[in-house]
Structures are given as C-alpha cells and as structure tokens.
Image (spheres, helix red, strand yellow):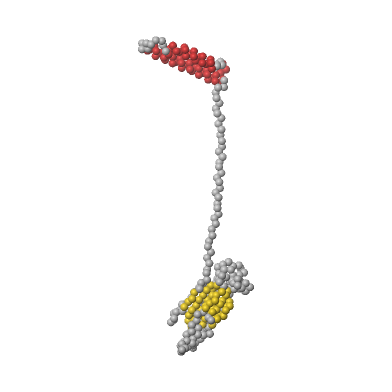
Length: 272
C-alpha cells in the first residue's frame, strides 16, 4: 500500500475525468452493438459479467484514492463535542408543623336547695347534701375554715346566715378561700312525751362567693303542749331522723333551740 505522502494531490475535477474515462471504456462491453441479443446471448452474459467486474474494480480504486485525499486535505469532519452535566440533587422542603392546641371545659357546682319532710308514725327521712370544701385554686396561706355567721336571729321563723366572702366583708377574719364552698342546713323536730326528738322538716344549701348569704324559713310544728326543737348548722353534719333524750346532735351548729327536748310534755291538743 503506497504511503500517504506518495499519493498525488487530486482535485475534484480530475476525479470526475477519471470516472468518465473508465465509464467510456466499459460502455462497449455493457451494451454490445446490434439488436440480435438472442443469437449473441452467451457473449452478452460474459460481457456483462466482465463489465460489472471492471466497474467494481474502478469504484474500489476511486474509493481507495479518495480516502487518503480527504484525510490529507482535512475533509473528515470532527465528531461533535459531547457535554456532560452532573445533576444537582434537590433538597426536599421541610414539612411545617402547626402546633395544635386544645382546650377542656371547666365544671362548676351550683348551689342546691332542698326541703325534707319527716314521715309520721315512726317513719323518718333524712336530707342529704354536698359538704363544704371548694375545688378552686388556693394559695398555701389560705386556710379553709368554713365560718358561718348568723346575721339575723329568729324572727317570725326566719334566720339569716352568711359566710365571710371578701366582696361583702373584706376585713373579716376567716374569709373564704378562692373556690371554697360551705354547706349550711336547718332542721326542725317534734318532741314526744319521753323527750325524744323526731325530724319534721329540713333544708340545706351551699354558700360561696357568688351566693354568700341565705335567709332561711324554719318550718316548725307543735304537738299539743310539746314544743318543737330546731337547729342551724354547717359543714358535714348529718341530719338524724331521731335524737333520743339526752343525746346531742349537730356538733357544728351555729344557732339552735332545744329547750323542749325533755320528758313530761303533754301531746294532747289544747281544747278550743
């Protein structure tokens, strides 16, 4: 194979001229003169094969000559540059957290009042209520004393009591602590000839800062000459249905009248 430097420099016009000359030389062999193709079929097939071989050889020669020429003249195009890029990873956005907040309802205890009636002929009923002791906030120096004062003595069957709330008596000792409540009650009894007391009526209520005062009406009953007894008390005192002669009740009482609790009274009604 000849060296690249030994190959003569050919122009495009010279290549066209060489191809045209090869084509003219091969043309008599490809198309023989005359029209009697049947008679000369064998010669034609041989001439066709020869011409095809000549054309193929010519094309190979031209290709061999053109390749060094294109490389020599810089005709081979350069491969296009390729670029590489490094993908930038995306940073996920942090999810936002919205604090939630929640609120719970506060329960409040409203004062209750009730009136009890004793059952006749040995039967009895007792009233019940919530005891003192508040659920509100209190400081360490606040003592829950539950003090109840009588501000109106018995007058036509009425007695008025009051707790020491800061709104009505701000300078008093033993004021209610924040949220403190105090249970207050009254109870009346009939007395039999043996001096035993039997529950007749009762009522109880809860006092606090919102309702510090209670004007109660004590319902009493006389049996002949046997007078009644009654009590006003506070706190967790129970309301007994019967108080035997000589026994005491209501240790936290603040007002009372039990002078008729003695034997020997006459239950017979007074004649009209």
